[in-house]
Length: 131
Image (cartoon, rainbow, N blue to C red; front, top):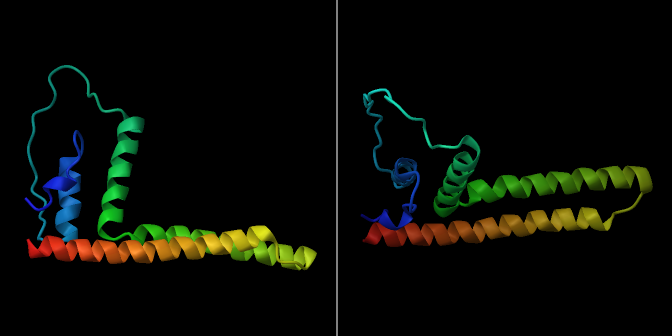
């Protein structure tokens, strides 16, 4: 019951609960289920729209439980872009450009935001464990 508030309104109960249980260190086991093939009609699942919605749910749960795993790659991307852009402009024009500064600063801000989010997530998990 402690993960009930995480469940989405219409889609993806199994994946939400599975990720929640794994992050909370509950044992998770795959149990195969036999189902009969569809007799008639077609699936209402749209690959693009439902796939995007599922991806957003996965990212939301990842950010909820371990935000640094989401923020760190983004910060590293900006850091590398800023570093290589600086390297290019320094070797070509012998200057440090504003864009390099913006990219490097953005990477630091995103990383710090990830650290703060990680602390909030840890506090939230401690509160959930106390229930």
